[in-house]
Image (cartoon, rainbow, N blue to C red):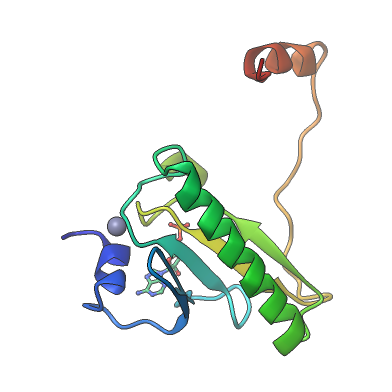
Length: 133
Ligand code: AMP
Ligand code: ZN
């Protein structure tokens, strides 16, 4: 087994467990954006969100929501970011599907990603390609 998160799930590498059930594990990210930053992973190895079956994705989202509620209730977190770095081009380093749940503080200095403007016709072109029919 070479996958880091599979090793964490198997207990071969220690982690700070935030939540665990039959199919899902949530543990503290070792390098948090803010304290409490949690990773939610399916226990079954899937590389990315397309590979994972729908019940797995739905269960992860349920746990993400519980963790967000816990941040708000127990850390008085005013908000949080959810992120999936889906595939290496999107910044995924560990190739085991994981949702980042990141507590945010007012004025914590973290900046959102930069945004661009659409060029002429670019919105229509991309829309025609990606629209789900
Ligand atoms: P990503 O870029 O989405 O693949 O993020 C991988 C995340 O895993 C990073 O935020 C790392 O800080 C985190 N990470 C790496 N090793 C560990 C570990 N042993 N325990 C907890 N989190 C880890
Ligand atoms: Zn894995």
